[in-house]
Length: 207
Image 1: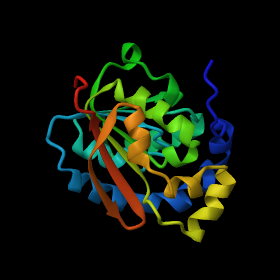
Image 2 (image 1 turned 90 degrees about the horizontal axis):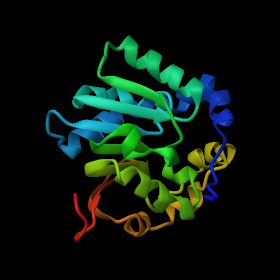
Image 3 (image 1 turned 90 degrees about the vertical axis):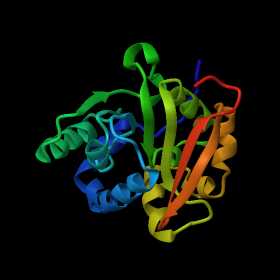
Image 4 (image 1 turned 180 degrees about the horizontal axis):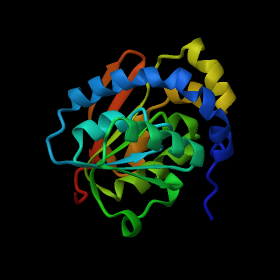
């Protein structure tokens, strides 16, 4: 039996009213990150841990189809409302635990994106999550999170409330953890205090 350590969904449901006070300002950087990834038209994306939809909105603008999941019902409700208010009709929201994703239930996607999720998990669980995501992806797994070596007190308090592994994450080797999941780094760049890791299947593994 898996022993996955994660913050309960009830915590995220409770913080929905204040969450966007901290997170909505990420929409513009997300747009810039996606522009730098140079995604070709007609691609599909799985978004893992969509929260209140701040990455979902830029994804909907560049992807032909987006499926966004989160395990917190109130987060999903907020994301659904925000995306609908902007007129996007190419996004499907589903309540799901990321560790329970399967190709049988979701099919495959060109890309998978996860933003500010991996730092919440202990290091031992990150390869498992990346491996779970990778089995649904044909091209790239993109991770957006805090950049390595960029410990900031302004984030530390919020992450303490979240009971995340923020400090350990910014000092860890994410590509090494991804390698355990059969992924290798294709590209890395930074946007302010945030890092973007673009992973592909490791050489010798089928796409």
